[in-house]
Length: 166
Image 1 (cartoon, rainbow, N blue to C red):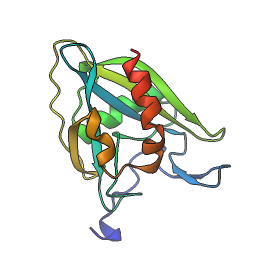
Image 2: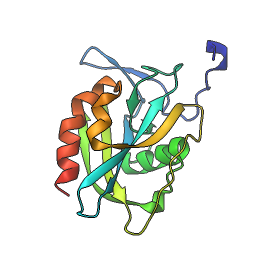
Image 3: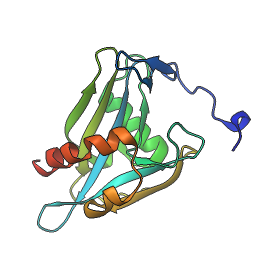
């Protein structure tokens, strides 16, 4: 894919923010993603849904959670569910929200919505837009075997701990 093939701005929240931390972040109104988990028969977190980011995207080729920029007036929960549906085919009604984890930089925030599959629900994830090379249920033990989006890699131990406590 060439620069001319890149998706155009899809909603008014798309754009870069120059953050006080010295980095640039995507999402004029912040961003959010969905960390969706599946449990084993004993109730332990066994798998999570990860997105292999398209090569043309920022930090392309890395793995993270489906997510993206919030639209004006959209809550992090609404944005995370919308993005997971757009990017991975996750039906919003098929998830049970367990909590959230916020990376707050003052002028910009990323909210990870923690969720699992609603009881009795099988969720078939797949790439549903060009932002993903692959969407997969990944065993918890193998998450760190993949090249992770740096911010997700930094947060992964805390996210797993929070999920495991629910």
